[in-house]
Amino acid sequence: MTSETDDLRLAADFAPASYDDWRKLVDGVLKGAPFEKLVGTTSDGLRIEPIYRRAANTAPVTGRAATAPWQVMQRIDHPDASAANAQARHDLENGATGLTLVFAGANGAHGYGLAPTAETIEKVLDGVFLDAGIAIELEVGPQSRMAAINLAEYIKRKDIPPGACNIRFGLDPLGACAVWGSSPYSWEEIVPALTSGIKGLAALGFKGPFAPGDGRVIHDAGGSEAQELAFVLAAGVAYLRALESTGVALEVARRMIYARLAADADQFLTMAKFRALRLLWARIDQACGLEPQPVFVAADTAWRMLTRRDPYVNMLRATMATFSAGLAGANAITVLPHTLALGLPDPLARRVARNTQLVLLEESNLAKVSDPAAGSGGIETLTQQLCEAAWSLFQEIEKAGGLFAAFQQNLIQRKVAATRAARETDIARRKTVLTGASAFPNLGEAHVAVLDAQPVALESYGEAKFKFDALPPIRLAAPFERLRDKSDETLKARGARPKVFIANLGTPADFTARATFAKSFFETGGIEAVDAPAFADPATLASAFKSAGAGFVCLCSSDKVYAEQALAAAKALQAAGAKHIYLAGRPGEQEAALRDAGIGDFIFAGDDALAMLQQAWQRMEQT
Image (cartoon, rainbow, N blue to C red; front, top):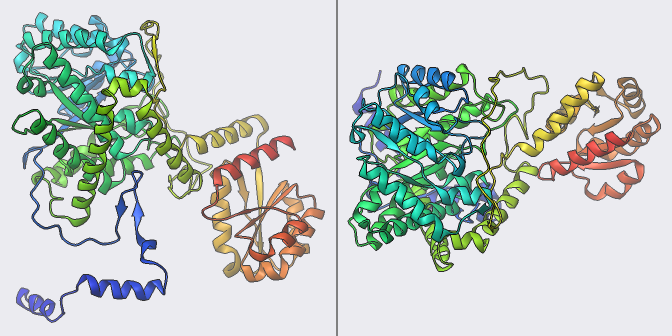
């Protein structure tokens, strides 16, 4: 047994490792390849180095106080008010410290949500003690905006002091305009309605905050981190100006505004984004001539990262997102249940969403340290880069005349569209992997239960007089999932899925890697891969293919075996009735000869898998 002193002496025997030492080792591994090969980039074009030095002269980013836990928020979105009340009471009894009341038509409703009526609020909040420290956040849209007034009237009827309530009212007309791509009113007409509502609630004694800069709008639409941050700043400043124009002092107005960001499974970028928002908002305070104060930052785990296929992986995504937002100082976190993309989550999904936060708080103690990322070279660098990129875009929005004017010029929408297109290309090529959807599919996955509920019907908001490009929410896995849906429909109608025969040539050492790749490749598109044993010669392989009953086939082996047998195998398969032949691997110099022999397409890492699978479906539907 060694003592602690011995351990320290052992460590001292090793020379300190420097960056130059590391570079020498890396250069040896690269063998002449450029170092830039190891440098990544974000959607904003920011560099991500493979290693960073410790950041010097840094201080923690001021946000949530050390040892202060974030608010554990739970979505209440069941259209049936009685069921929603049962959910709310159960969540509060089992660890939630706040409720996110999601009303139909809100940006984050995703098809469901509460009716914005006084009767609904009365039922939903029955037995919920609003003056007992419970946090409430409203998610409302233009059609459900009366929910805020109805909640205030409910509190008045119950003789609850408004100042004793912790309510974020969620009044966000700019976020709604962005998602809808239209508005019945100009910004000049929106301002008096918005500010009178906020001032009226404040006059009743509510502390707020009342209006969010909601970055989820950009994130859900496929935008980048800097675009999301710039949107939050621009919305926040627009609301500040609106309030100031109606006589509210900036010192008071800033406390009426809060921020909401999406947290996704990219740990370091999510942490850097939340930290950057703190620094950027402090700069807004300074520009207003105010001493900076931490803005309240709410977090939702990201909608766009949810998958309908293999939804249990969403639990892991949500855990990483919550971990990242919590470490980066979010004041409140709402975890989207892992089955939300499939429908209204059942009690199990809701419990998992709630417990994701409770385990990280109570067992992992994530809230015990304030800004633990301070001094980390990588995260500090990303934070500063995001600050610079977001501030530059914010200035561009301001030069355009503010956020509403930028909508009308499609300034933001064009940038988000370009980012979304690049992101979709990476997903189509499987450069960005979505486990269970674009990689590692399970065609036999079990049915996942969701609740059966009828969404609330809302009245029309009014004629869209001001129109511009919309920023609707997307899910990144949707293109691959549409192919899986077609496969399920085919199975239901015909009793079998479309199939591709995996033709393995040579020994397992020759074909295993590419056969595994090919199986995953085709099954991400819902095309069942028919496994086969090894075949030593093309004639035996062709005979086995004919017996399998699959019209399509994929050759799998090593480059050496391809050079020796691929041409003969392709001709034999074609003679056996193969309607289309794929080969796993890059064609190289043999491409012309292989195509002449009957090879139709080549599948390999980095190619457009989605396009290839869509073409496969077109061929199968034509045969």
